[in-house]
Image (cartoon, rainbow, N blue to C red):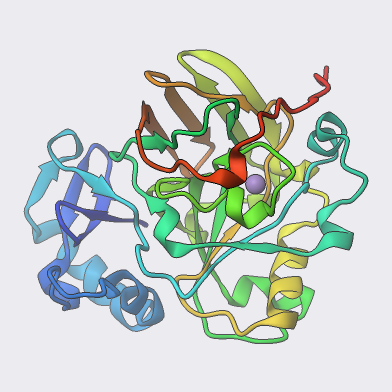
Length: 296
Ligand code: MN
């Protein structure tokens, strides 16, 4: 099942090129603040799934092209992100570490944006803002200390994610924290609709030029390992998002670019890049050009 958020916090099921509105069916006021309706839907999904499936044929549908898709989980408890989790990306960045011996970092929830929202480039002259295409894991259950072999019990689904970053040597979280630096979407594809998350092709284009192309089988720390590592440290909650790391081919985007990310069986997002006049900071006063080694 493909679960989306749209048109001001409404919840929907995507069926083909249409979306069925399940807001009334599953409860929750779209206007509430904070907007945790999707988090609740994820928590209660095992109980609600039968109701949703039974009602689906009779629910009114809108063409997807006529709605504004929004980031599916706007208020997760946290966004966990694994750095350098593909060897070829580690080589291009000349990083000596991998996610297996580095652990994770966190991105702020306020960085989340949706497929219809542009990525706003901060005003940081002399710096490059890079795209990182990533598979997102959406957690389904409150859990702690999950063993590798139990990972499927707590994974709810998957989405496309862009981990945007200002390149530099400053604190990683600082460089990855800007508003709109974490587009997620276009919806959550539930885990039962993904044959094998460890064998998914993922591609990213900028203005039609293929920049990143990889398969999740090349993850250094695999999905069971990412769930085990995160839950060894923290309680995970329904709706938590794990950014699983980017493969090689990262690079800069500029005003007017259009980023396309496609992950097999999960979805496709097309996101515009727009220069903003906000975000200046003395931290980025010195210019920096990353010494990236192109991989074959
Ligand atoms: Mn990343």
